[in-house]
Length: 308
Ligand code: ASP
Image 1: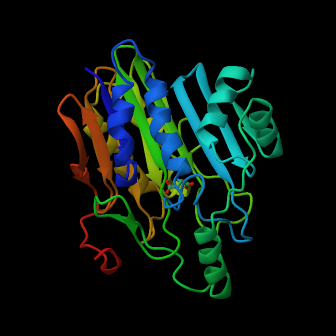
Image 2: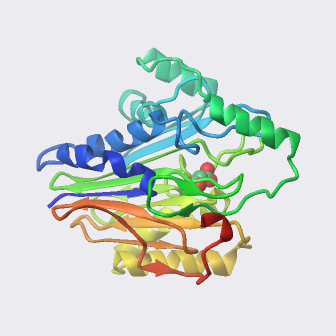
């Protein structure tokens, strides 16, 4: 049995071809990378890779993490010259003695290892930044709403990340790649490239990954917390519920905040949950590919007007 999970319906188009590369014996990280690479290259996805919205100064920076285990992971943070952030993170894992490389050094390391230098700011993203710059007092952000059709509905400022978990008879692997929060303070780093925050993979206990307001994720070591609950015997659904309840109890959650969590055991039992309605994820297994609504939504709210 093999399984592929990813956040948001914009990752749906790549699922079948990625799943084809997840046959027994294949490296699950390759399948996860397939989805991450394609979403990063898509200029219509405005929160990951090329096409991502920039920071307050109009500069774009990308963050990514790949992980197989506590001993095997890599992060590339604040990339400003290469679009392939997930590939850069994999290079950190496979070709450096380190776990995290950030800033100009991360760009240099990626380019020295064959990733091309490219312009990161897509024309549409630049236009939206120009509009925001001339009216920065507009609504700082409503959470994204996924209607399952491959694009997200929201006002300016929503953000979202492609997080992928892959499982087969070789084990588990995960990737998390993002351009972070639009209009962020230059230099801001979210949860996505931080092991145990945006993504955590343990070969014996399971994997979890998160999209949403990174500022709510980091302090609760959220992905690690989900996997730790599974280590203690919780099923993925209970582990996600515990995390989301913890965040709500311990942190100031704003109306625009959203968290979407997916988790899987080494045997391929999975669950998903979100803080609010509007999050969707994609699953492929032997029964095919479908866009799913998480079974667990902590705050029950109506559909925002911007989603209609
Ligand atoms: N978690 C990402 C960040 O805070 C963005 C997102 O997933 O929406 O940078």
